[in-house]
Image (cartoon, rainbow, N blue to C red):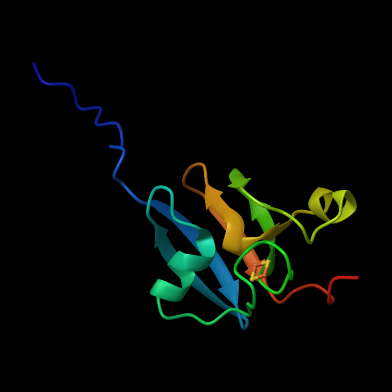
Length: 108
Ligand code: FES
């Protein structure tokens, strides 16, 4: 008898929910792709500048889900503790990530 359990393959994209300009979008993020890249590929336009983890323009608030941030030269430990992430440097570690752009004051 065949098993009904089909684990996701390594090529299955993660599904991320993004709030931008008060609208909610579901975006598929390829394995190893940053959230920022996937959001742009989906035709959305969040703020950005360096795309290198330095300026902080692409910041978003992560409300749920697990992520990994490769480079962070913009956010303090306190900002990280509040859930802020640099989307240009962040990849999901599974389905269910939910984040908001533009819902925080300018980084200080
Ligand atoms: S665009 Fe500069 S930190 Fe992401």
